Image 1 (cartoon, rainbow, N blue to C red):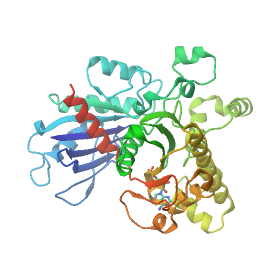
Image 2: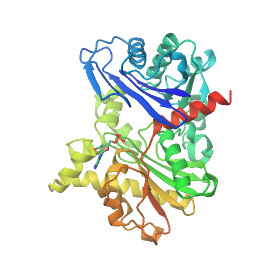
Image 3: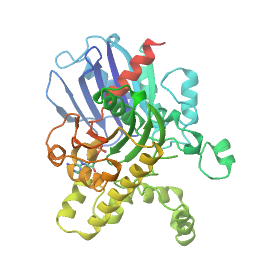
Image 4: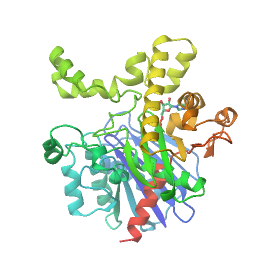
Amino acid sequence: MKILVVNCGSSSVKYALFEMEKEKKIAWGLIECIGLPEAFYRRQTVKSDEKKESVKIANHTEAVELMIEELLDEKSGSILNIKEIAVVGHRVVHGGDKFFETVLVNDKVKEDLKNSFSIAPLHNPAHYAGIIAIEKMLPSIPSVLVFDTAFYHTMPDYAYVYALPYEFYEKDHIRKYGFHGTSHNYVSQKAAKMLKKSLNEVNLITAHLGNGSSITAIEKGNVIDTSMGFTPLEGVIMGTRCGSIDPAIIAYLLDKYPTYKDSSVLNDMLNKKSGLAGISGLSGDMRTIVQAVNDGNRKAMLAFEMFIYSIKRYIGAYYGILNGIDALIFTAGIGENSAFIREAVCKNFCALGIEIDKEKNYEHCTYERFISTKNSRVKVMIIPTNEELMIAREAKKRLTSK
Ligand code: AMP
């Protein structure tokens, strides 16, 4: 069975084609800057090397058309007929208050997704455009939506309701939704396997540390809490996002600087000009920050320390809420690649039974592994995330349980 996974952004289409018997990715690609003169198409298959070229692409439909042409290409293509694709799995960032599980696309689902635009204005309109484009180009192939927020459906209300007047929750659906769910879901399943236990026997804290970062507390397979909230802005300090701040700061800024009365300017500052970039004045990219720390840059050092501190705070809190954990898992760009950051996060956590082995932590490899010491009560693990595969698995599950 072949499954196509599609992730549509506002000006991009990213895809991966999986052969599910061995869960092998056989083709993948990215079309970026859709609608702009600098649009390009980068793709690769197991049979051919990476190709990159400029393209003229006006919209998502044309991008999907190009992707299908490439998948069917006589020389480098991966399928002979589009009917080989059993199902298309779409990544959808926000399921709002309507979607708490993977769904097959139908008219009602599309309508509900449209109604979620106000709650997820940055992502869901683009996902919707992708769904319509796929429908147009592959009318006979079913589509399934896999929501980043769905993994959090087990959160208790005392964790997801904000202490605002209750009508904002009831009428406006303002609550914690949580994000990166597909990644946390993937690594938690893999962690249980590595621990040789079933998911409902273990307590885990998963740390997805990338440009966007989130920490999730999972008790016997059920999410209890997560650091991101109504939007991906809440939680730990991120590359360019501020993470949790005192909400009164917003009211203060609105009074003091009229420019922030425009909510897009305010959102831009909080989402794109804050975090590591805002503090250091350098960049939101962690590699640049680490380099600047090594060069003795004071503000980069502060940004770095704040990042580590905010992560430790969540781990400490979730450890207490879960009444102990079996494993702490690092994933995503920073979590998988930076031994320096994993070391800093785990430093002085021996009271919690978290001790990492320096050599194992600094070992250069890209596969999943344990990095805790033999005596560490809590296993510390690095598990490379694989959201595309998780979406393919979910799509297969939904299709076969239809
Ligand atoms: P992601 O959003 O998961 O792609 O992660 C991107 C982030 O990972 C960026 O901030 C990168 O700087 C960071 N990153 C990748 N490799 C390293 C590394 N070796 N050391 C520190 N940060 C890294």
